[in-house]
Length: 266
Image (tube, rainbow, N blue to C red; front, side, top):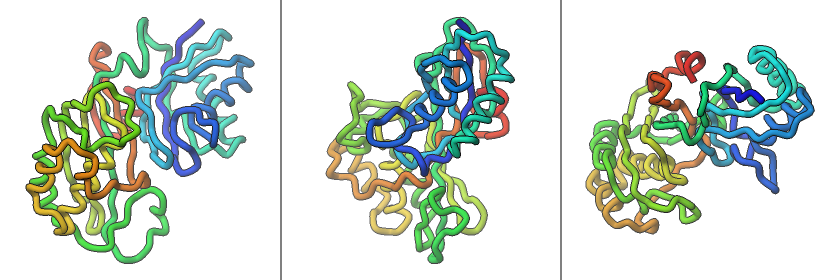
């Protein structure tokens, strides 16, 4: 039995999320179906994190155990061929034999997400489903000031879904950066050891309210202190959210949001 470590990319618009669902297609199901066609085996893929319906991935680490002797490159090529045939918008970017003890989820010590916004009145054509269109310019300085209130160790009850199954709402947010992308775009990058269900989308929604001038900067801190989901003013849609990178400290890997680097290290 060989454990393979893969790096995955996908367009989340056609999926109900990463995890197998009874009511619709999932990324996990697409991969497991492809693997069964390649090896004849029923095996479970494990990923560094879960994503909701409509959420994308730039470089999601995953692993799977395969009994059939097969080289990593051939497994990657075979899986990509089956995924293409199934019209599943999932790609295996890299595949290697995993080091001893590696687990895509439990070995992971850091995760990063990227959220894309486009500020314009016209509807999105090329970026439809891949970014959140906000029809007015946003106050970048105010959003950055509000973001600092969320960085650190906090009870994020306000910023997690009522369906979140995490045992504790306390998380340490290592970084929440807001970057301009051209004349119309904004990118919000968040990094932490782990996130609560809907935490990134909830934080983005609050920051957009600040950027639109509907909330003063301090309102974000007040919402955080309230520890009450009803204090959240807006939950951002899944369209602009991407799982961007993962860190594995024991493997001495660099934690980066650079997609090209993730292709070789994740």
